[in-house]
Image (cartoon, rainbow, N blue to C red; front, side, top):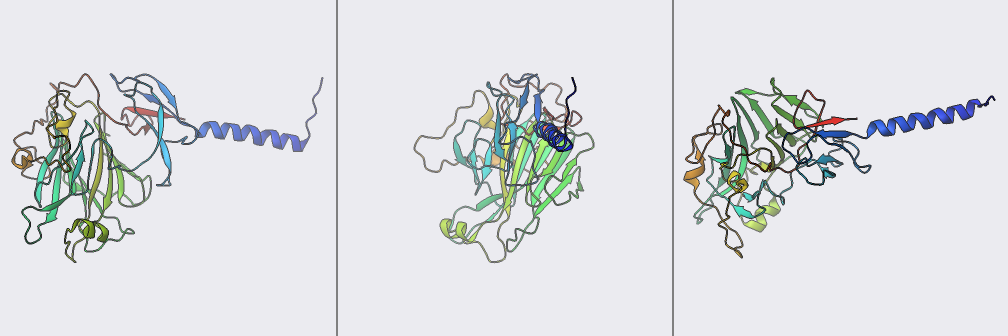
Length: 339
């Protein structure tokens, strides 16, 4: 029995088949390959509302997976730092610890402090700010991050500016002392030679995600102190500096039970938060305990970083948040994407 198909029907059929293939190819799957995570060894399909793990549109929601989630379900999120979630460091500066509790750490202007210190990871912050007449402390913001990962060093900083212009990129990067040229443009990506550090521009300017292989993901927005901020908080910002700074959200993996630092200590399994209930602005002191001599030093009183991490004791509970999956097995950042 022969079935006759007209040329018009054939065109329609081919279009349907092509559309079906393209639609399915556009949906990404990823595999949680981080040993010890709750979803280890599982493939997860991205939902229809956010079928891909990346987008050239910085405002679009993309697919994320939390491989430590007991449900192993993907989520649709924008690729930007959120200041009201655990692991964030924003404003002047306000932290939300791994336990979800808000606290402030003012530090001092033009000095450096340990934010996270573990045996194989050190993350410092450089604070900028000023002290108006009559005040007893500086108003401060985080201007730069310095990262020591095993035997390598990486820095990310916001460039100073008298006035804010969102059409100018205010980011500067270095790796092992050499300045990096990461072209502007959404999805522009740089990898370190060993593929242990990845920097991806989420938008063309002033927003990136830094992924430290099997260790952490750092979402960064670059913002100024606005006139409205100045009015509300009475910062008395001078006319020649809008204090361009970083909004940061950290997502950690495999922190040890001994992790320290302004933020890192809140991820300890035995951490007991000293914040008293009902305190409007709980402030962490101990500047001397966390102060480092430079952005890329691990010489504070509480620092435990060592280039030799062979004896690292990792936590039985992998903390984490949501790690950005990476395209292709060669990147090896904990989650492998597949189409």
